[in-house]
Image (cartoon, rainbow, N blue to C red; front, side):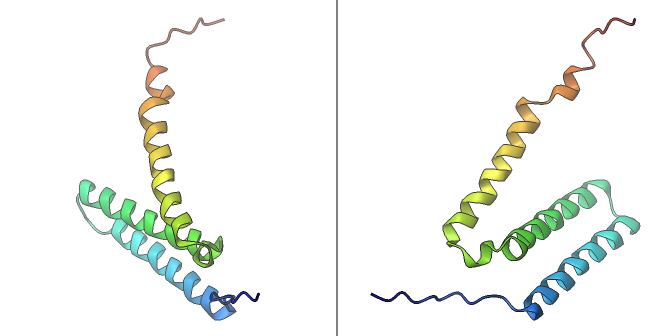
Length: 104
């Protein structure tokens, strides 16, 4: 029995294009910060660009592009769920304001 590989190894050209694309995303983020955009729009656009940049880094630099697609599409929602759970249920920073610490 022979197995055929459908995914090819990425070339240096692919990595350079991905790197330039990520630099472009960072440049867009910098332009948005220095432009006079409302804070809600700035926050939403920076979050979308950060998630896009993280997805590109996961797919190409961590080689998930060449893995089973189901792995990638279950990894991202799992990470987002973990971040939301950490924000909502493990928010110790908000609880620190109500604690009384003895001053030595």
